[in-house]
Length: 286
Image (cartoon, rainbow, N blue to C red; front, side):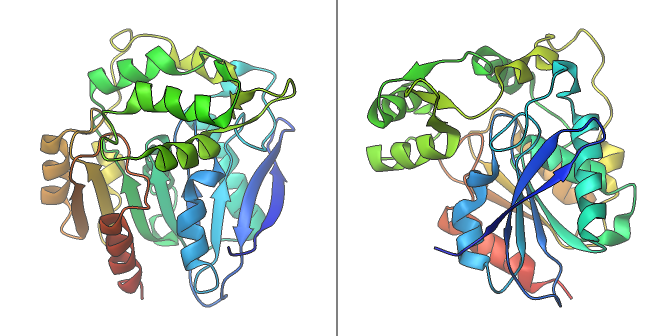
């Protein structure tokens, strides 16, 4: 296991926000890892352990997740606020060039970072996300986010995740579900196993799609042209369709599209195909 330092920065509204900092050489751009909606810095643990020493890896807890503070105003749980928080971290650490690695929501934030200063992005990894979000996948996420369930033991938690998401990772054994549970959850103050995020993150996300027109995110994606890029897509993903992925590859000749067989939303980045694709991407960075 690679060592990391628990570090923090402060948001404009005074929240102490946390990230893991795995040391690496100064001569390479660091990896800035941004997790999905209900996820945290531990999502990138295996990848960071593998790359630490050769690359600096920063794994972020967005506000309201992991070891970052919870917001007083739940309406600050939105992408523009997350983007502002990340920009402050980038400034705090003086990151003039970095590799953005984003899963789901983190991938949207990675795309949103590009227009402000495209030259600072040495490369981009989009994990099961693109400019078009499928309504069915968004509705599935709305059904479970913010439910506040708790479990007596880690095995109970793992079995519950398997029951709820077994179709996303059909080949997983119980050991895989236990490992997954320990990424998603912690032991709460009452001794029960709980999800490691503020249940109020669901409040801004609760409005059904269609209440407002979806923004056109293709211009954000197009800003990524001219640098190494990787799109990982689960074959059965309900968030990014095969058609959207193909269109992304057609629009950006620098994009390596890798489809992971039998997996839904989202790949864990631990799969052999994901590891090989990430290594290919990093080898392209000048």
